[in-house]
Amino acid sequence: MSKVNIAIIGCGTIANNAHIPSYMNNSEVKIKYFCDIILERAQNAVDQYQCGQAVQDYREILNDKEVDAVSICTPNNCHAQISIDFLRAGKHVLCEKPAARVLEEALEMQKVQHETGKILNIGVVNRFNKGVNLIKDIIDSGELGEIYHVYVSFRAHRSIPGLGGAFTTKAISGGGVLIDWGVHYIDIVMYCLGDPQPITVSGKTFSKLGCDIANYTYADMWAGPPISNGVYDVDDFVTALIRTDSSTISLNGAWAQNIGHEETYIDFIGDKAGIRLQYGQSFKIYSTKNGMLTETIPNFNMDNHFQNEIDSFIRSIKTNEKLPSHIDNAIITAKLMQGIYDSSEKGREVCLISEDN
Image (tube, rainbow, N blue to C red; front, side, top):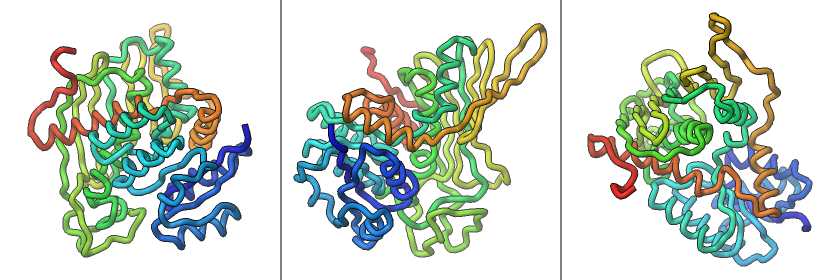
Protein backbone atom coordinates (compact mmCIF):
# COMPACT_ATOMS: atom_id res chain seq x y z
CA MET A 1 0.00 0.00 0.00
CA SER A 2 1.24 3.50 -0.81
CA LYS A 3 1.44 6.23 1.79
CA VAL A 4 -1.68 6.94 3.81
CA ASN A 5 -3.07 10.40 2.99
CA ILE A 6 -4.20 12.26 6.10
CA ALA A 7 -6.22 15.41 6.70
CA ILE A 8 -5.86 17.30 9.98
CA ILE A 9 -9.17 18.86 11.04
CA GLY A 10 -8.50 21.56 13.60
CA CYS A 11 -5.02 23.05 13.93
CA GLY A 12 -4.95 24.00 17.59
CA THR A 13 -2.89 22.83 20.57
CA ILE A 14 -3.54 19.07 20.51
CA ALA A 15 -2.98 18.91 16.76
CA ASN A 16 0.35 20.74 16.91
CA ASN A 17 1.60 19.12 20.12
CA ALA A 18 0.62 15.53 19.35
CA HIS A 19 -1.12 14.55 16.12
CA ILE A 20 0.87 16.45 13.50
CA PRO A 21 4.37 15.70 14.89
CA SER A 22 3.46 12.02 15.22
CA TYR A 23 2.22 11.82 11.64
CA MET A 24 5.35 13.64 10.47
CA ASN A 25 7.46 10.99 12.25
CA ASN A 26 5.69 8.16 10.44
CA SER A 27 7.29 7.37 7.08
CA GLU A 28 4.05 5.76 5.81
CA VAL A 29 2.05 9.01 6.07
CA LYS A 30 1.50 12.03 3.88
CA ILE A 31 -0.47 14.97 5.28
CA LYS A 32 -2.52 16.35 2.40
CA TYR A 33 -4.68 18.93 4.19
CA PHE A 34 -4.59 21.18 7.23
CA CYS A 35 -8.10 22.46 7.98
CA ASP A 36 -9.18 25.08 10.48
CA ILE A 37 -12.09 27.53 10.64
CA ILE A 38 -9.40 30.15 11.21
CA LEU A 39 -7.65 29.82 7.87
CA GLU A 40 -4.51 31.52 9.17
CA ARG A 41 -3.91 28.66 11.60
CA ALA A 42 -4.20 26.12 8.78
CA GLN A 43 -1.79 28.14 6.65
CA ASN A 44 0.63 28.42 9.57
CA ALA A 45 0.65 24.62 9.76
CA VAL A 46 1.41 24.38 6.04
CA ASP A 47 4.29 26.82 6.48
CA GLN A 48 5.63 25.17 9.62
CA TYR A 49 5.52 21.57 8.41
CA GLN A 50 6.25 22.32 4.75
CA CYS A 51 3.52 20.09 3.40
CA GLY A 52 -0.19 19.95 2.68
CA GLN A 53 -2.80 22.47 1.67
CA ALA A 54 -4.67 24.91 3.91
CA VAL A 55 -8.48 24.83 3.83
CA GLN A 56 -11.11 26.48 6.00
CA ASP A 57 -14.12 24.20 5.54
CA TYR A 58 -13.72 20.46 6.14
CA ARG A 59 -16.49 19.76 3.65
CA GLU A 60 -14.07 20.69 0.86
CA ILE A 61 -12.14 17.51 1.75
CA LEU A 62 -15.02 15.02 2.00
CA ASN A 63 -15.07 14.06 -1.68
CA ASP A 64 -11.32 13.90 -2.19
CA LYS A 65 -10.79 10.23 -3.01
CA GLU A 66 -7.09 10.47 -2.24
CA VAL A 67 -7.73 11.17 1.45
CA ASP A 68 -7.68 7.91 3.42
CA ALA A 69 -8.19 9.17 6.96
CA VAL A 70 -8.58 12.21 9.18
CA SER A 71 -7.56 13.32 12.65
CA ILE A 72 -10.30 15.41 14.25
CA CYS A 73 -8.79 17.89 16.69
CA THR A 74 -11.65 20.37 16.95
CA PRO A 75 -13.64 21.53 20.01
CA ASN A 76 -15.95 18.85 21.39
CA ASN A 77 -19.13 20.25 19.86
CA CYS A 78 -17.82 19.44 16.38
CA HIS A 79 -16.65 15.87 17.03
CA ALA A 80 -19.84 13.99 16.23
CA GLN A 81 -20.91 15.74 13.03
CA ILE A 82 -17.45 15.88 11.47
CA SER A 83 -16.72 12.25 12.37
CA ILE A 84 -20.03 11.10 10.90
CA ASP A 85 -19.54 13.12 7.72
CA PHE A 86 -16.09 11.65 7.09
CA LEU A 87 -17.19 8.09 7.91
CA ARG A 88 -20.02 8.40 5.40
CA ALA A 89 -17.53 9.80 2.89
CA GLY A 90 -15.53 6.57 3.21
CA LYS A 91 -12.70 7.90 5.39
CA HIS A 92 -11.17 6.38 8.52
CA VAL A 93 -11.37 8.63 11.59
CA LEU A 94 -9.26 9.28 14.67
CA CYS A 95 -11.29 11.67 16.81
CA GLU A 96 -9.81 13.35 19.87
CA LYS A 97 -11.31 12.67 23.27
CA PRO A 98 -14.02 12.86 24.42
CA ALA A 99 -15.92 11.11 21.65
CA ALA A 100 -18.65 13.74 21.92
CA ARG A 101 -20.36 16.15 24.30
CA VAL A 102 -23.12 13.73 25.31
CA LEU A 103 -23.75 10.00 25.05
CA GLU A 104 -26.45 10.43 22.39
CA GLU A 105 -23.90 11.96 20.00
CA ALA A 106 -21.34 9.24 20.74
CA LEU A 107 -23.91 6.50 20.11
CA GLU A 108 -24.75 8.03 16.74
CA MET A 109 -21.04 8.04 15.88
CA GLN A 110 -20.85 4.36 16.83
CA LYS A 111 -23.94 3.57 14.75
CA VAL A 112 -22.48 5.20 11.63
CA GLN A 113 -19.16 3.41 12.17
CA HIS A 114 -21.01 0.10 12.21
CA GLU A 115 -22.93 1.06 9.08
CA THR A 116 -19.89 2.16 7.09
CA GLY A 117 -17.31 -0.31 8.39
CA LYS A 118 -14.69 2.42 8.47
CA ILE A 119 -12.38 2.78 11.47
CA LEU A 120 -13.46 5.16 14.23
CA ASN A 121 -10.95 5.44 17.03
CA ILE A 122 -11.16 7.89 19.93
CA GLY A 123 -8.12 9.68 21.36
CA VAL A 124 -7.98 7.77 24.65
CA VAL A 125 -4.24 7.88 24.31
CA ASN A 126 -3.37 6.15 27.58
CA ARG A 127 -4.36 2.83 26.02
CA PHE A 128 -1.06 3.24 24.14
CA ASN A 129 0.93 4.20 27.26
CA LYS A 130 3.63 1.65 28.13
CA GLY A 131 3.18 2.04 31.89
CA VAL A 132 -0.59 1.62 31.67
CA ASN A 133 -0.17 -1.50 29.55
CA LEU A 134 2.28 -2.93 32.09
CA ILE A 135 -0.34 -2.42 34.80
CA LYS A 136 -2.94 -4.13 32.64
CA ASP A 137 -0.57 -7.07 32.14
CA ILE A 138 0.07 -7.31 35.89
CA ILE A 139 -3.66 -7.29 36.63
CA ASP A 140 -4.36 -9.86 33.91
CA SER A 141 -1.63 -12.11 35.34
CA GLY A 142 -3.45 -12.28 38.68
CA GLU A 143 -0.57 -10.77 40.65
CA LEU A 144 -2.91 -8.34 42.42
CA GLY A 145 -5.55 -11.01 43.03
CA GLU A 146 -9.15 -9.80 42.93
CA ILE A 147 -9.37 -6.08 42.16
CA TYR A 148 -12.31 -5.19 44.36
CA HIS A 149 -11.99 -1.40 44.31
CA VAL A 150 -10.27 1.35 42.34
CA TYR A 151 -9.85 4.87 43.70
CA VAL A 152 -9.27 7.75 41.28
CA SER A 153 -8.08 11.27 42.05
CA PHE A 154 -7.59 14.04 39.49
CA ARG A 155 -7.52 17.16 41.62
CA ALA A 156 -5.70 20.43 41.03
CA HIS A 157 -5.45 23.45 43.33
CA ARG A 158 -6.82 26.44 41.36
CA SER A 159 -6.53 25.90 37.66
CA ILE A 160 -9.48 25.85 35.15
CA PRO A 161 -8.42 25.96 31.49
CA GLY A 162 -9.30 29.02 29.42
CA LEU A 163 -11.78 30.36 31.96
CA GLY A 164 -14.68 31.96 30.11
CA GLY A 165 -13.84 30.29 26.79
CA ALA A 166 -14.60 27.03 25.00
CA PHE A 167 -13.48 24.77 27.86
CA THR A 168 -15.96 26.34 30.27
CA THR A 169 -18.90 26.74 27.87
CA LYS A 170 -21.12 23.66 28.11
CA ALA A 171 -22.62 24.11 24.65
CA ILE A 172 -19.10 23.70 23.22
CA SER A 173 -17.35 21.34 25.63
CA GLY A 174 -20.24 19.28 27.00
CA GLY A 175 -18.91 19.59 30.54
CA GLY A 176 -15.99 20.58 32.73
CA VAL A 177 -13.37 18.67 34.67
CA LEU A 178 -15.18 15.33 34.29
CA ILE A 179 -15.30 15.39 30.49
CA ASP A 180 -11.89 17.08 30.14
CA TRP A 181 -9.71 15.24 32.67
CA GLY A 182 -11.98 12.51 33.97
CA VAL A 183 -12.32 10.88 30.55
CA HIS A 184 -8.64 9.88 30.67
CA TYR A 185 -8.70 8.55 34.23
CA ILE A 186 -11.94 6.61 33.84
CA ASP A 187 -10.71 5.16 30.55
CA ILE A 188 -7.45 3.96 32.14
CA VAL A 189 -9.42 2.18 34.85
CA MET A 190 -11.82 0.54 32.44
CA TYR A 191 -8.99 -0.53 30.11
CA CYS A 192 -6.87 -2.03 32.88
CA LEU A 193 -9.87 -3.90 34.29
CA GLY A 194 -10.76 -5.34 30.90
CA ASP A 195 -13.67 -2.99 30.15
CA PRO A 196 -16.13 -4.39 32.72
CA GLN A 197 -19.89 -3.80 32.41
CA PRO A 198 -20.99 -0.68 34.33
CA ILE A 199 -24.13 -1.33 36.38
CA THR A 200 -24.93 1.79 38.43
CA VAL A 201 -23.44 5.18 39.12
CA SER A 202 -24.05 7.80 41.78
CA GLY A 203 -22.40 11.15 41.25
CA LYS A 204 -22.46 14.84 42.02
CA THR A 205 -20.89 17.70 40.08
CA PHE A 206 -20.23 21.19 41.40
CA SER A 207 -19.62 24.54 39.71
CA LYS A 208 -18.22 26.74 42.45
CA LEU A 209 -14.88 28.47 42.08
CA GLY A 210 -14.93 29.78 38.51
CA CYS A 211 -18.32 31.47 38.51
CA ASP A 212 -16.96 34.92 39.33
CA ILE A 213 -14.60 35.06 36.36
CA ALA A 214 -13.35 38.61 36.92
CA ASN A 215 -12.27 37.88 40.50
CA TYR A 216 -11.05 34.29 40.09
CA THR A 217 -7.59 33.83 41.62
CA TYR A 218 -5.66 30.99 40.05
CA ALA A 219 -2.39 29.14 40.48
CA ASP A 220 -2.01 28.32 36.79
CA MET A 221 -4.11 28.34 33.65
CA TRP A 222 -3.55 26.91 30.19
CA ALA A 223 -5.62 28.08 27.23
CA GLY A 224 -5.85 31.40 29.08
CA PRO A 225 -5.97 34.17 30.11
CA PRO A 226 -9.53 34.40 31.48
CA ILE A 227 -12.24 36.02 29.37
CA SER A 228 -13.96 38.29 31.88
CA ASN A 229 -17.23 38.50 29.94
CA GLY A 230 -17.15 34.83 28.94
CA VAL A 231 -19.25 31.83 29.96
CA TYR A 232 -18.78 29.50 32.92
CA ASP A 233 -21.51 26.86 33.17
CA VAL A 234 -19.58 23.61 33.65
CA ASP A 235 -18.34 21.51 36.55
CA ASP A 236 -15.10 22.32 38.36
CA PHE A 237 -15.48 19.48 40.90
CA VAL A 238 -16.93 15.98 40.61
CA THR A 239 -17.34 12.98 42.89
CA ALA A 240 -18.83 9.61 42.00
CA LEU A 241 -19.22 5.94 42.92
CA ILE A 242 -19.45 3.44 40.07
CA ARG A 243 -20.51 -0.19 40.40
CA THR A 244 -19.45 -2.62 37.66
CA ASP A 245 -19.91 -6.35 37.28
CA SER A 246 -16.47 -6.76 38.85
CA SER A 247 -14.95 -3.86 40.80
CA THR A 248 -16.33 -0.71 42.36
CA ILE A 249 -14.75 2.62 41.41
CA SER A 250 -14.78 5.87 43.35
CA LEU A 251 -13.46 9.16 42.03
CA ASN A 252 -12.89 12.76 42.98
CA GLY A 253 -11.82 15.34 40.42
CA ALA A 254 -11.25 19.08 40.50
CA TRP A 255 -10.04 21.72 38.10
CA ALA A 256 -10.10 23.96 41.14
CA GLN A 257 -10.36 23.43 44.90
CA ASN A 258 -9.30 25.33 48.00
CA ILE A 259 -6.72 22.71 48.86
CA GLY A 260 -3.15 23.58 47.91
CA HIS A 261 -2.16 20.19 46.54
CA GLU A 262 -2.45 18.43 43.21
CA GLU A 263 -3.36 14.76 43.52
CA THR A 264 -3.42 12.89 40.22
CA TYR A 265 -3.27 9.15 40.71
CA ILE A 266 -5.17 5.87 40.41
CA ASP A 267 -5.14 3.16 43.11
CA PHE A 268 -5.89 -0.40 42.00
CA ILE A 269 -6.72 -2.26 45.23
CA GLY A 270 -6.45 -6.04 45.12
CA ASP A 271 -6.63 -8.74 47.79
CA LYS A 272 -3.05 -9.87 47.04
CA ALA A 273 -1.39 -6.57 46.12
CA GLY A 274 -2.14 -3.04 45.01
CA ILE A 275 -0.83 -0.49 42.53
CA ARG A 276 -0.69 3.29 42.64
CA LEU A 277 -0.24 4.90 39.23
CA GLN A 278 0.88 8.51 39.32
CA TYR A 279 -0.80 9.93 36.23
CA GLY A 280 1.67 10.49 33.40
CA GLN A 281 4.48 8.95 35.45
CA SER A 282 5.50 5.58 36.87
CA PHE A 283 3.70 3.31 39.31
CA LYS A 284 4.42 1.44 42.53
CA ILE A 285 3.34 -2.07 43.54
CA TYR A 286 2.47 -2.67 47.21
CA SER A 287 2.54 -6.29 48.40
CA THR A 288 3.89 -8.67 51.02
CA LYS A 289 6.68 -11.25 50.92
CA ASN A 290 7.96 -13.57 53.65
CA GLY A 291 5.97 -11.73 56.29
CA MET A 292 7.21 -8.31 55.20
CA LEU A 293 5.56 -5.36 53.48
CA THR A 294 7.10 -4.63 50.11
CA GLU A 295 7.11 -1.70 47.69
CA THR A 296 8.35 -2.16 44.14
CA ILE A 297 8.83 0.47 41.44
CA PRO A 298 9.11 -1.26 38.05
CA ASN A 299 11.99 -0.08 35.90
CA PHE A 300 10.93 0.72 32.34
CA ASN A 301 11.46 3.42 29.78
CA MET A 302 8.49 5.70 29.18
CA ASP A 303 7.66 6.02 25.51
CA ASN A 304 5.68 8.51 23.45
CA HIS A 305 2.13 7.25 23.68
CA PHE A 306 0.88 9.81 21.16
CA GLN A 307 3.34 8.39 18.65
CA ASN A 308 2.18 4.89 19.55
CA GLU A 309 -1.43 5.95 19.03
CA ILE A 310 -0.80 7.45 15.59
CA ASP A 311 1.41 4.57 14.46
CA SER A 312 -1.24 2.09 15.57
CA PHE A 313 -3.95 4.03 13.74
CA ILE A 314 -1.95 3.93 10.50
CA ARG A 315 -1.26 0.22 10.98
CA SER A 316 -4.95 -0.49 11.58
CA ILE A 317 -5.87 1.28 8.33
CA LYS A 318 -3.61 -1.14 6.48
CA THR A 319 -4.53 -4.30 8.41
CA ASN A 320 -8.10 -3.57 9.59
CA GLU A 321 -6.96 -4.38 13.13
CA LYS A 322 -9.46 -3.32 15.81
CA LEU A 323 -7.54 -1.22 18.33
CA PRO A 324 -8.27 -0.79 22.06
CA SER A 325 -9.31 2.82 21.31
CA HIS A 326 -12.12 1.75 18.96
CA ILE A 327 -15.46 3.49 19.51
CA ASP A 328 -16.94 0.20 20.76
CA ASN A 329 -14.60 0.40 23.76
CA ALA A 330 -14.56 4.18 24.22
CA ILE A 331 -18.37 4.24 24.35
CA ILE A 332 -18.22 2.67 27.82
CA THR A 333 -16.45 5.72 29.24
CA ALA A 334 -18.98 7.96 27.47
CA LYS A 335 -21.80 6.03 29.19
CA LEU A 336 -20.15 6.41 32.58
CA MET A 337 -19.63 10.16 32.22
CA GLN A 338 -23.21 10.62 31.04
CA GLY A 339 -24.35 8.55 34.00
CA ILE A 340 -22.47 10.77 36.45
CA TYR A 341 -23.97 13.93 34.95
CA ASP A 342 -27.46 12.36 34.93
CA SER A 343 -27.11 11.20 38.53
CA SER A 344 -26.03 14.67 39.62
CA GLU A 345 -28.95 16.30 37.86
CA LYS A 346 -31.52 13.81 39.19
CA GLY A 347 -30.06 13.67 42.70
CA ARG A 348 -30.03 9.88 42.83
CA GLU A 349 -28.21 6.76 41.68
CA VAL A 350 -28.86 5.79 38.07
CA CYS A 351 -28.85 2.34 36.49
CA LEU A 352 -26.77 1.89 33.35
CA ILE A 353 -28.15 -1.47 32.23
CA SER A 354 -31.65 -2.55 31.34
CA GLU A 355 -33.50 -4.76 33.81
CA ASP A 356 -33.54 -7.72 31.41
CA ASN A 357 -29.73 -7.79 31.43
